[in-house]
Amino acid sequence: MKLFLVINEDRFFLSHRLPLAKAALKEGYDVTLVAKDTGRRKECEAAGLRFLDFPVNPTGMDLMQELKTLWWLVRLFRSEKPDVVHLVGLKCMLWGGLAAWICRVKVVVNAVSGLGVMFSGEKPGMTAKWMLRLIRLASRRKGVYFIFQNREDKELFARNRVMRKEQCRFAKGSGVDLSEYGYVPEPEEGKIVVIFTARMVKEKGVGDLVSAAEILRPEYVDRVEFRLCGGLSTNPGALRKEDLLRMCDGRYIKWLGYRKDVHEQLKMSHIVAFPSYYREGVPKSLIEAAAVGRPIVTCNSVGCRDVVEDGKSGFLVPTRNALAIARKLKVLINDKELRQKMGLHGRAIAMRDFSIDKVVKVHLELYRLGETKED
Image (tube, rainbow, N blue to C red; front, side, top):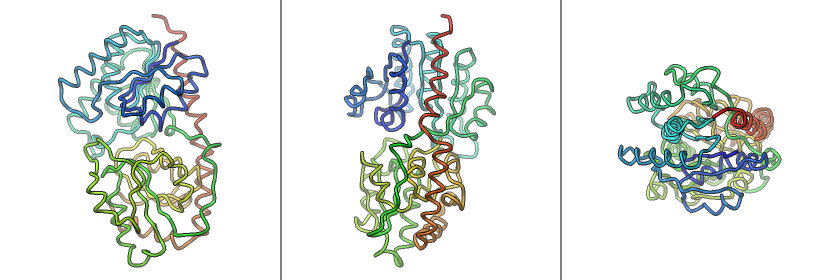
C-alpha cells in the first residue's frame, strides 16, 4: 500500500505529523513524504521515509506558479499511483485534491489543520470562497474524507457545501505522546517564566503579548521573564527579525528564535501565553503546554478555546486585548497554588483528549479504506 503525505514544509511535518508517519510505517505502508525541503530532509529520511521535494510556495498567490504546482502533482500521482493521499493544510488540499481527482486516487484524506489568516474574518473573502469551491469540486466523490480539529471549521465547510456529513471525522489537534510529554512541576527557583511557543506571526498574538508584558513591566521587571520561542516565517503576517529585536530587550522580554528543545523550554516555564487570533486548528503549542502541566492564557478564539477550560486550566481572554492578557497573567504570577492547580487540570484534559494514539487511530482507519476499494 502506497501512502503519500503531502505537506507544505518538512519542518511542519516533523513537528506535527512524524508520529503518524511512523505508525503507518509500522503498519506496513510504503510512505512517501511530499514536502518543501527547508533543510531538514535528512531528518525525514532518517525516520524511514522516502522524500520528494515539493515545488510549492506555501503563501504564494501567483496563478502560473500555482498551476505549475498542480501539474507537478498530477504527473506525480499518474506515475506513482498512490493508494492513499493524505493532504495537510489548505493549499495542499486544494491542488492535491484536484490532482487526486484527475488521477482517480482511491482514498484522499484532507486534514483541516487550521484555516489561517484568510479565514480569520467574520466571512470568507472571494479568494477563500473560490478555494472552498475548488476543494468541493474535487471532493464530491467516494473515497474522499475530511479530518477536522474543531467544530467551527467543520461548520464553515458545511455551510459552503464542501463535503457531506459521512465524509467527516474528528481528531482534536495533532496529538502528543503523553509518555514523552509527562507532567513536570514548575521550577521552584528563579524568575517566573511566561513562554510563548509558535512561529513569529503577528496574528499569533506576539505583539499583544509584548504589549501585555510592557503593562506589567513596572511591577514585575525583576520577578518575571517573558520568552518568545519560535522562528521566523514566510507567512504574510510574519514579523521581521528587526521587529522582534526592537520588541525584546533581551532581559525582561527575550526572543529565543527557532528551537528544537521546545519541550525543555516548557519544563523551565511557569505559564504559557498564546493570545492568537489566527484561525487555528487546535494549536499544538497549547496541547504540549497542557500535557506538561502549565496554566495557559489564550484567546477565546477558534481552536484555542478547544484546549482550555476557562478558570480551570487557564484563562480565555478577548482577542487583541493586551490589558486583558496582562490582568490574567498577573493573577497567575501572584498565585503559585492556582498555577499548580490549573496545570494539573490541564494535564487531565490532555490525557482525556489529546493522546497521539487517538489521532493515529482516526487516520489509520481511513488509510485502511484504500486496501478494500477497487480501481
